[in-house]
Image 1 (cartoon, rainbow, N blue to C red):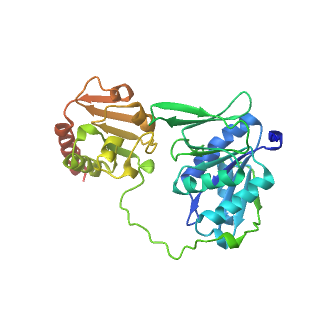
Image 2: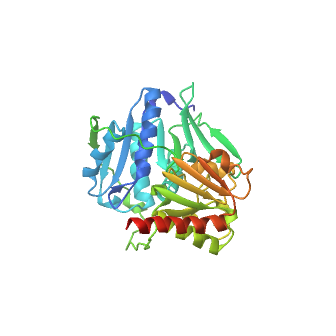
Image 3: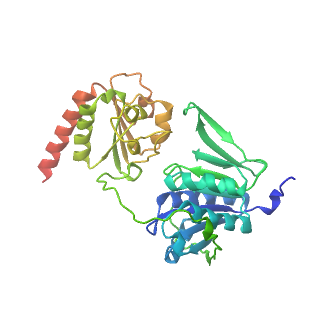
Length: 338
């Protein structure tokens, strides 16, 4: 039996929050949802789940939401797959959105597939682009074949059309405090017999490093850095600049830097004010994750390296000599000002 797609409308965004703090990816997705909804002539609906979360709902309207559906329940205090899946499944089945967007975070990557299965629809994961076709269908673009190809996927026969989008891919729209919207409290009828997991305790990993997607300056290393000692030099430069260290996939695969520091199609998308690309050749997969940086400084031995095509300032030379010299000079300038 063919689905009546005409009864499905509006663009829904799952608003990820952790410890009652709304995550940036939710604001990014609401901004993109606003673009898609305007093109369709429909509304943006933000879905906010949690406990003692109602006060946060009004924060979403200035970023583009027309309606915030707020589910405030003790069962949703900490993210657990089954309660969250039941809540969103009930909302989608009752309200029939045309599009549902989630962040491609650890939570979104867990929740998205479960929702897709419950709702009997498709899910396109890790999208880097979303557009509306002439047929008013969602065009979901994502890397394929190891990032060597970009595939655009359409969910023609089922609704809602579902997509997860990586944090940092979409730009957060400027906040508009004059926007008006509605907040609606929603009651969920949970089937607690299916709750098989309880969170007994949250233990946080102590991290001294800032999330690279939030950094103003990034010092990023590629194959040309070569070894642990090379990254020590990058760390010294980053320390003087007040920057964070990141890397290309090759350095993550080599075990020289953690995966959460990876920039590129299979890593994170970043937009710092200044991006140092040190010993990075400039493969298209890496460029996709950093090409929208405000100012790109590249250092590479190979004057034909593709990274120079994207750089605002390019230096051809040995970074193992240039980086320590640059660090020393910057430290001297800082000392003069103190």
